[in-house]
Amino acid sequence: MISSDDFPYPLVSTDWLADALNAPNVKVVDASWRMPGIPPARLDHEKRRIPGAVFFDIDEIADHSTSLPHMLPPVETFADAVGSLGIGASDRIIVYDDAGLFSAARVWWTFRTLGHERVSVLDGGLPKWRRENRPMAAGKATVEPVAYQIAQLRGYSRSADDVLGMLKNGGGIVLDARPAPRFLGEAAEPRQGLRSGHMPGAVNLPHGLLLTDEGALRPLHELARLFHDRGVHAETHVITSCGSGVTAAVLSLALERLGHRSHGLYDGSWTEWGAASNDPDRFPVETGS
Image (cartoon, rainbow, N blue to C red):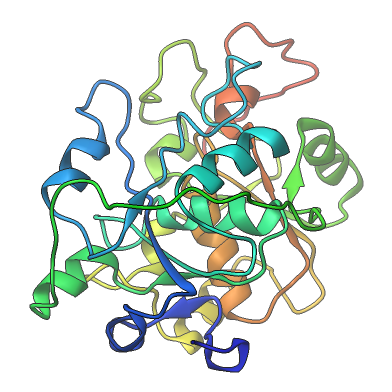
């Protein structure tokens, strides 16, 4: 068994996972995801995955009472889905994706927000695992469903009202993880029906800047500099945002890596804020720097 003292947070290395892969209380989760219009990541998961890994579909394990994509699921939906994947509340969960570090952070954030403390991201993800010629498997993993018990929920999710309040009162910084051309309004959004630009007062930190060329998180001193240059200090409250709440979680993960705990993620992100049908007085949009 892997004890809590042996569980690194919020990242684990490929060496750590290779040593712990057969531990009964370690569960591996493939959180790979594709934008709409691209064949789903589940197809690639079943062709090549880390042994024992189950697939977490962020579009399916979500709140389907809203038209916004992959919003945080209700607790019952989450518990049923996670239990069906054979994951128990006391398990140590390792999340990865096939891009290196992209959607894995979103699933890490989901588990954390819904009360699961022992969850980390595989640094470098599946690409690093494969480069190192680690063992691989295909097909669906065989799991035995369990009854998953929700723990105490955590206040890591933020609403549009939370963002409006922060932008109005200056109580912190809204960090937008989208690429600079989209933030500046120079490039169209990949989803239809959205305005171009950003929230007035938001600060751009494209999530790709936090990653090495191999798709791992940059060293701590480099991460610290990127946040410091955008006005984030030890006591700064941060709300992370992006297109639909996926890459915003990469910023949240990096903040956790730095030991910064005063942050939340705007779940609706630009898909909610930037909707062309919104009242521009309530959801103002700005272009340029």
